[in-house]
Length: 181
Image (cartoon, rainbow, N blue to C red):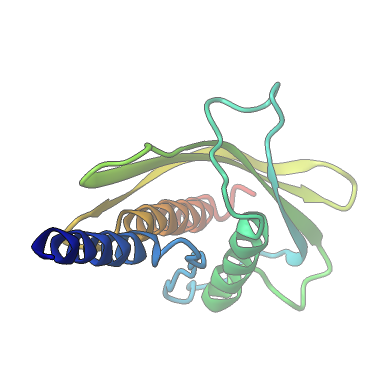
C-alpha cells in the first residue's frame, strides 16, 4: 500500500514538473523597442520594410528560427521603432525601402545563462535601386535564471533582447549617419 502511494506521488510530481517545464513553450516574440524621437528626420519617406532570413549562401552562421511569426514580429517592431523615433520624413518626395536580412541567429540549446547572437544586414534603397545605406549590425541578448526561471521563456527573453538591441543599434547608426545618406 505504501509503495503504491509513493509511486502515485512520484507520478504526480513528474506531471507537475513537466507542466512547469513546458508551460512556456508558446512564447510570443516581443521585439518592441522604445527610443526617443530624433532631432530631425532623414529627408526620405519610408515606403516599406522587408525582413527576411538569409539563404545558405548569404548567411554568416547558424540561423535558429523556431517561430513562424519571427519575421513578421521583427518587421512590425522595426516599423514601430522607426515611427516612434520619426526617423523618416512622411512628407518627403524621396521614397526609400528597407531590407533587413537576418544573417545569423545563434541560439544555444540550454543553459542557466542564455546568450543569443544576431547579425542583421540592413539596406536602404531609393526608388531607382541605388543603395543609400548598407551595414551589418551585430547584437546579442542575454537572459539568466534571475530573469526567467523556465528555460523556454529564458530563451525567448534572450531572443527578444537580441532583436531589440539590433533594432536599437540600427536606428542609432542611422542617427549617426545623418547628412551622409
